[in-house]
Amino acid sequence: MPSTISDWVDVRIVSRLDAGEVLGLLDDSAVQGGWQESETLHLYWPSEAWSPDHLMRLRQILRQLDEANEPDIQVQALPHQDWNQLWAESVKPLRVGKRMVVRPSWEPVTLSAGQFEIILDPKQAFGTGHHATTRMLLEWLEDIVQGGESVLDVGTGSGILAMAALRLGAGQAVGLDHDPVAIECAQGYAVLNRFGAELSLHCSELDGLPGPQWFDLVLANLDRQSLCRLASQLAGRTGTRLLVSGLLVDQREEVAAALASAGLYPGRQRESEGWLAVEFLRSESCEGV
Image (cartoon, rainbow, N blue to C red):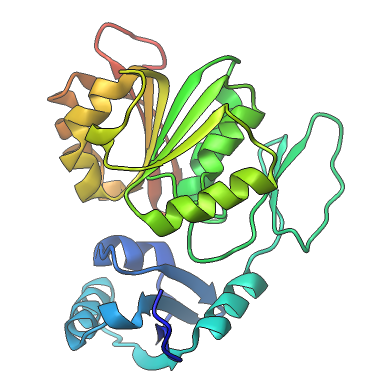
């Protein structure tokens, strides 16, 4: 993390456009977060990753979404501590499905019988469960985890999906991310939530993951390009079911074609706020199709 006083660039877009749609079309791995404040969309880049080219690309995306109205864009430096404070203020307890509550440590909640909580204090924009792509998978896990499954979470970020799967009854979960900062955060969350050897977290690419060849359930909340690039590797790790998220509606067929070439075919799907989560199964299985 840079140590200069202006560690982040806060790009403010005055517009009614959907934050998820803008981020999806932007498809920029350097973006470290985005949130909506009334009619202002905030996007954050690390200061060393920002350039005028990003602004040009952003203007192109905005014109693509709304040719008639070009929104006002403001770019300003944001000290690191202010960034943390903004995220802290934006994250509130989230109830997901019937059993799950995701909350920051400073916001206590009352749990009903059978409910459980996962505590995540926002450190950066690593999934707190509030984004539709993560929330859909959390809801889906409540429906499909029966108990004892092995789970692989590719692009684990905060580790929230792996931790939720374990709380719902999975026997073992592995979280994988190529970003060492994400894994450091996830390891801290694992300790905070009192997970032990049943949860392992690795900073690695998918093809470098040690351990079993396949998992009962594979989760991949990734962008379109990553899902297509990793299609054969994801299929090689999937024993029964792969759940993917992070897709815009019009990206479904491209990802489905890539996974079909690796032997996985789409089953059920869920949609929220313009995003899709899709289940993929092996051709010999008709479960869920």
